[in-house]
Length: 145
Image (tube, rainbow, N blue to C red; front, side, top):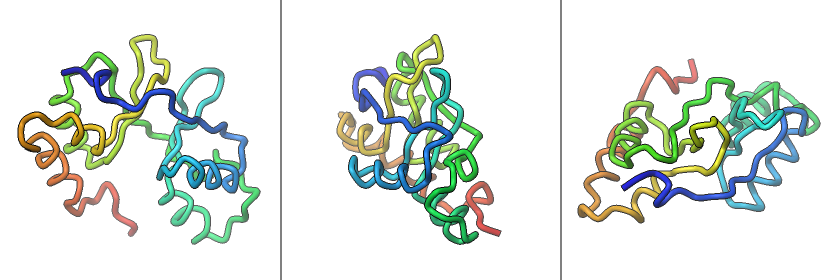
């Protein structure tokens, strides 16, 4: 099974010059914990609810702060035609719950989450359990120190 068989299509994107308040409102509206950040038809970052809390609010930034000041610039992603098992393993290794999905022209075409993977699990949940077991482990990658 490929990622394209179970990913969420038509993801919402914010611009780097949007305010963090706009990003937070969009996240609330679509009930999501992150948004891809795009500029000139390219994915340039991600902003998460954690970025808003830890990088913005904790540092005293106001609601008019541009997304580019708090977004995560290192973007991990996968391709729509990749094997779902390989992407689940990649998510486990990276300890992430979701990844943007690109086509081979590197254009954003969707998002894959652990939830999407769990709905596609036809192996009794083994794929999801394996990915989730690593995602929930403490890591220096996500350390707040």
